[in-house]
Length: 114
Image 1 (tube, rainbow, N blue to C red):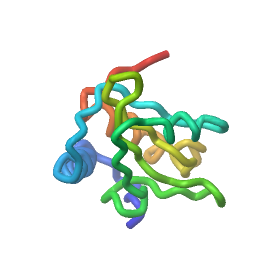
Image 2 (tube, helix red, strand yellow):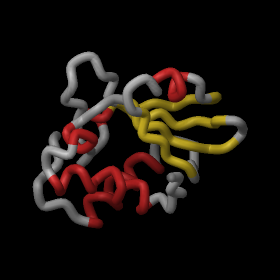
Image 3 (spheres, helix red, strand yellow):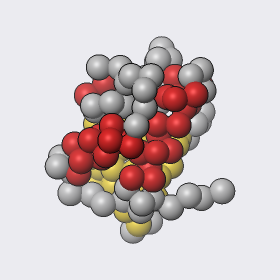
Image 4 (cartoon, helix red, strand yellow):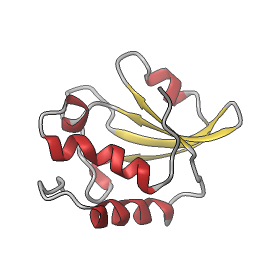
């Protein structure tokens, strides 16, 4: 199901709760893997993956050939989640969807790295 335009904290919380129930991982760092960074996500230790299309209220991958999945695991011993594959939100075609990944990350209390 594609997310609605009326994005809310409740939808984010629902998405985070769905993932928490399905993974042992508790990431503190989120990495959005842009072009060329797919191998970084593939290098995670103890990976657990979820296709965007299977995650409630999460934007789907809309770019042909992109994986469109969240990968949870450890990178150099640190728990993290990698967002692999472009979607409408990374392309920022719709403001509400472009904010959804940031809000999702905030609902997990993930660190922002600049």
